[in-house]
Length: 142
Picture: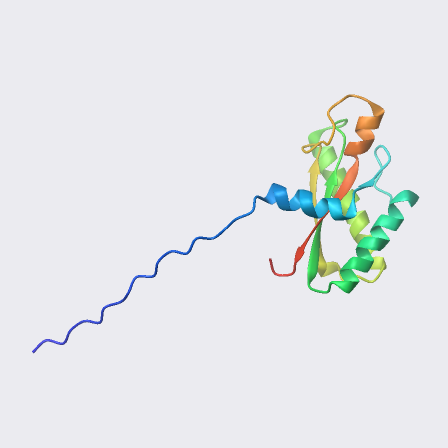
């Protein structure tokens, strides 16, 4: 007599709801606002310090949260230069938040250079809007 082989039930695939990253970014960024930079600079301006302090305070209270700091530039300069400048801006903001008591491993940086402008007009007001760091929050491990 031959033993019967065990029958394995096939698992049904689960439907996973996804939220587009753009929606998450817009929702999270608006919580804190952006900080801005002078032309060709990555030093933190005085008008940015209250925003950075409120972000640090929020992160201290929300210990399971992480944050991505996205550096941006206006479109003057080469793409390579602006990617490097955007990274320096994001790291300057990160360093300020770390100095306020948040551990560095909870803060990631990325540069988009001139690739994601908020404004496309060739005016100083528009350039100023594009020289920024945006803040995207999320839970640790996600």
